[in-house]
Image 1 (tube, rainbow, N blue to C red):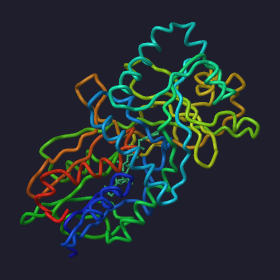
Image 2 (image 1 turned 90 degrees about the horizontal axis):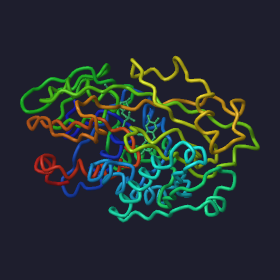
Image 3 (image 1 turned 45 degrees about the horizontal axis):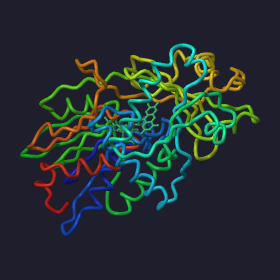
Image 4 (image 1 turned 90 degrees about the vertical axis):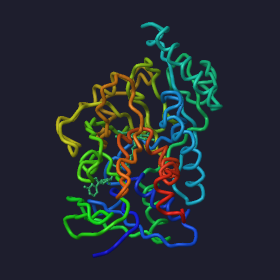
Length: 382
Ligand SMILES: Cc1cc2nc3c(=O)[nH]c(=O)nc-3n(C[C@H](O)[C@H](O)[C@H](O)COP(=O)(O)OP(=O)(O)OC[C@H]3O[C@@H](n4cnc5c(N)ncnc54)[C@H](O)[C@@H]3O)c2cc1C
């Protein structure tokens, strides 16, 4: 039976980023790392099914992990993409207020914009108030009467990002076991025996980066805490009418009331210049249900036509969906990322509820995990 120091469940962006960070830090003593993944490639679940936006963190609750790690992670991800040739669209982001929003009650959006403005000021994130003429200069076809621009926001090719992190970790010594679904974990003499549907391994430390299934892996790992993840689908349509594909050049988000849970259906251009709209929020019963009861394109047109009046259902073609791993909590407030050492011996680290802005935060999240005292005391070489 193979023996590892650290085994990571999940080759999404978070699992791959942690493997890379552990290997970047390793000094004298070698450390044996295994990443177990149920699919045949990295990033097949949430990490490859999102908007690819590297967020600034100002949408997140002040002083939360989401806020801090998105801010730090976005900077790290841009530097990483430039160094490793991961496709990037560096055009900033706009949060727009339409004429229709103003007619329906400007106070609501002003409250939201003021909150973002304050968060930006507090975290020293550069933002610009956009007058109608400033908006026209950068997005000539956008119908909006004002907004906020966040110049530091970029869009990354999320699949290429995950693949690059996987390649780098593998090249520096991590092992990846694809088509290996973790189905059992037992404790034996201070370590874990992990069973997949193909093999059995022994590991000193288990890091659970299993995304939508992180609640199940936490339970298998005999976590002292119980987690429940509720899947929330987000769907995307692509704008396929050739003369409309280049009408919007950067992510354009609506201004939403402060209690909104997501960031809203937006225009989502990608580094390859394709333009998508989405995602909505649709609770699903099954964590793998990407396609049943697809929302019709009419809903997306209804929401976004105020910004682009020429948008029509005939312009949209179904593209894909992703599923958010939302944690069920008792609190009504927006949940934070959970990074928790839930057993010390053997060491079990659970990463739960890594929903948006998890892609933005991934590299900083990996640093955060590798800085955990329990991990550092177990492996002084990192
Ligand atoms: C619609 C949508 C839009 C989003 N937009 C953005 C955005 O613009 N910007 C942003 O920053 N974030 C965004 N996010 C969030 C971001 O995509 C996630 O936070 C991030 O991808 C989470 O990565 P992960 O590695 O934790 O999870 P995942 O990518 O889900 O990786 C977990 C991996 O674990 C594997 N796994 C699970 N169970 C097992 C098992 N038993 N055995 C072996 N392997 C297992 C899975 O196959 C999977 O590959 C969005 C998410 C959604 C759904």
